[in-house]
Amino acid sequence: MIKSLYTRVVLTFLVSVIGGTLISLFVTTWVFQDKLNENLRIPLLRFGQDIARIYETLPSREADVLISGMKQLDSYHIRIYDENGQYQSYGVLNGESPVTVTREQLKKVLAGEAVQVKPSIGSSNLLGLPLKTEMGTKAMFVEPIVPPTLSSTRNLLFNFLAYSLITGSVLILVASMFLVRPIKRLTKATRRIATGDFNVELNIKQMGELGTLANSFEEMMHDLQHLEQMRREFVTNVSHEVQSPLTSISGYAIALKKVALTEDERNRYLDIIIAEAERMSKMSDSLLKLSLLESQSQQLRLITFSLDEQIRRVIVAIQPQWSARNISFELDLKSVIVWADHDLLSQVWTNLLGNSIKFSKDDSVINVSIKQDLDNVIVRISDTGIGISPEDQERIFERFFKADRSHSRKYGGSGMGLAIVKQIVSLHKGDIRVESEPGQGTTFIVTLPIIVPTE
View 1 (cartoon, one colour):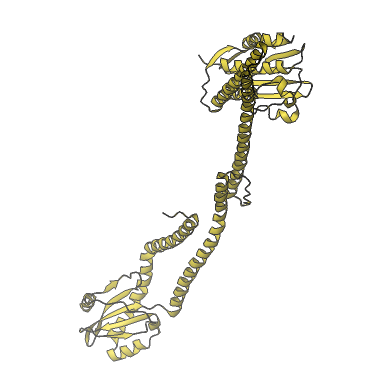
View 2 (cartoon, rainbow, N blue to C red; view 1 turned 90 degrees about the horizontal axis):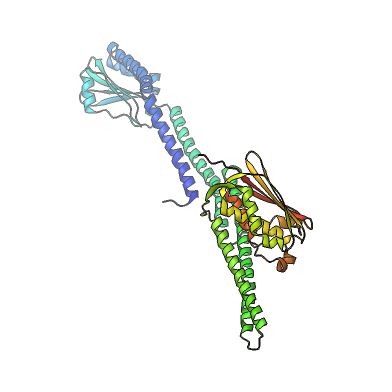
């Protein structure tokens, strides 16, 4: 099994050229063989008949002299056999070997029968005719002679084909090097990427399939680099998010071992440990939830329900969060029936409304509206909170990303909520986007397709 692409290309070219040439030669010979033989046989027969008439008309000695001086001997070679198999030849073969005359052919011609021998590869026509002389019947065999010019032309043609094959082989060897070189670069780049080195420059400027392959490879390399960066950030964020509560739990657990603690201090330490443990539990649940959503193994339990009624129930369920801060809601909820996963969409509204309450000022208003067109339902949730900077808006749906870095301790959270929201909306073939200005508030816009179930 040949593994080298370079060797495969070269061998394929050579086999194709040589095989094609041989097949063309055999096909051409097979198709035109009868016509060529006929074109050669007729002049040969006429010349033999002329020689026979000369011997019938003139004495043998005069006929021999006449034939010896004929110009046609430049094109034909004559052998005249007697009964004993001895022959006299006329004409020069120009270095070619005469066609062998068998004893059987000789007997047939001496018996008065004309013999035509079809040529094979490497041999010429052979015509045997009875020759009547005053000394009795003899056998004359006539064959065409390849002229020196034709022989030279044939040799020149074979040399041309040989040199063409050699030249073509050299050219394909050089061309194959240019063909295989980009693939070798891709192979080396693949090995470097496998070791984690994404700073690879291919510099392949070829057009066609190889150029397309190189461009696709570079796009894949950039995507892998982005994924690797996201993986590192994820590991860093997880480590940071886990380390903070673990440090608190460890510190306050050590403090509890001290004997000189009041009952209030002991209870406060225990409350902090419980809160940090709950925080880790929630983060773990969020990670598992997001992992399940992203693995495409989450099966949507689609049912028909009222979307506006669902949002009202979520607002009522989180009433302790907004009533304690005297936050109110302005609702413009059009009655809409959707076909979706009730529990997952409920989590979307819980997270988005929870964020709006968390980042809103006290005594403020949150606006929630539902609009519907022919194909989609659009839900807008707007607050007048701290807002999000333009550079952070591009990353707020990434896991562990927190736009409010300067207020992270005040507002808390693991940075997983919006990533989960994004994934749930995507599973429903929908879209979510954000509009915000720092200090002016934030609006989340969720677009979901309306799928009417068939009965």
